[in-house]
Length: 60
Image (cartoon, rainbow, N blue to C red):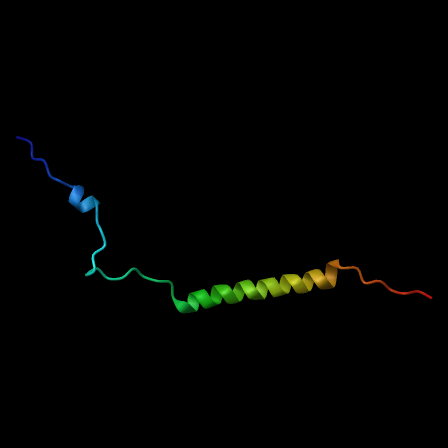
């Protein structure tokens, strides 16, 4: 006779209060990402202001 095994228990796993908590992103990584976004935004704003806005000269 063919043996049948019930694999539904293994496939469906609910989190229990006894399971270890899910790994969170490190605070240092989050700070690095936010800092990088701020620096890139400031650099882009500076380049836009210095290169792409016209600076009119007054000739008299």
